[in-house]
Length: 329
Image (cartoon, rainbow, N blue to C red; front, side, top):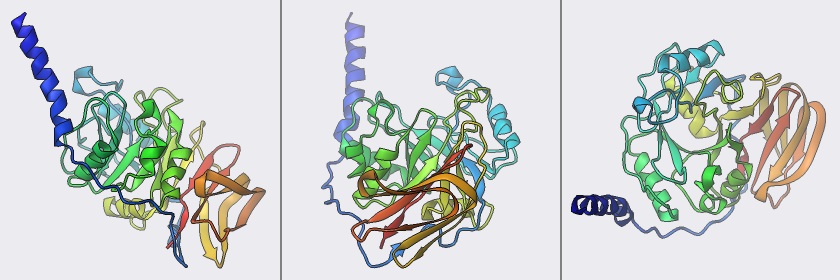
């Protein structure tokens, strides 16, 4: 009995230590993007881009985590689908990447009950520190800051899953570049707009988060089309950091149009696709949809004077494209 008591006391101590180690932050006041100019992430876009998935799981940890396939099977599944980048992002494990795609070592960070997870992209080492039970804003900020010491980019993933990251969190968190807006578990547009509306320049990722590559409902259906100026690791990282990419959702795994250009001319955003889109919608602060266009290849939206950003969602019979926003600068 005494051994059990000592064991429980040790576990409790281990659970408490991360809370004591996390600092308290003075969260800066939030404010929308301001300025007379526009930052356009597609100013140097040269499509169609590199098909990319940064979130997939293979069998790992002796089957303790959920992943049904070998790393070789996961790599092969993405290579045969024409992916240029296909990272295996097992929990706290940097994969030895192979299989004919561009190497971008990535792992999923998070051992906690609410699925408050992140991707460490371009990772050189694994950070094991986490807060295992409930996490407050300060804990989440501390974890984001820590990951940047061993990764080139940090992304918050599946924010709505189990309430891992709330919209209120995203109004305040800083120190990450990317948000997984598309994941086969759900779409997180409202979380994205919460971050953008409070002046956080966060770019959208589309990822499968597949755990079984034989399941067509979760493999090859959500991805990121990256406009890398060089088809290598540095080019992909640079494009992701700049927002020069498009998040795409397609139940059939194909996109029947691609982005050709997006330009800001005066107060107008001009977007051109490789073919006509069924519908394109302009979204501004707070996720407000202000305008739409139907059945056109070239689309123009006037940006309201009070808007701090504008982003476009375009749909076709095969796919939906989520463009990163232009933001005041």
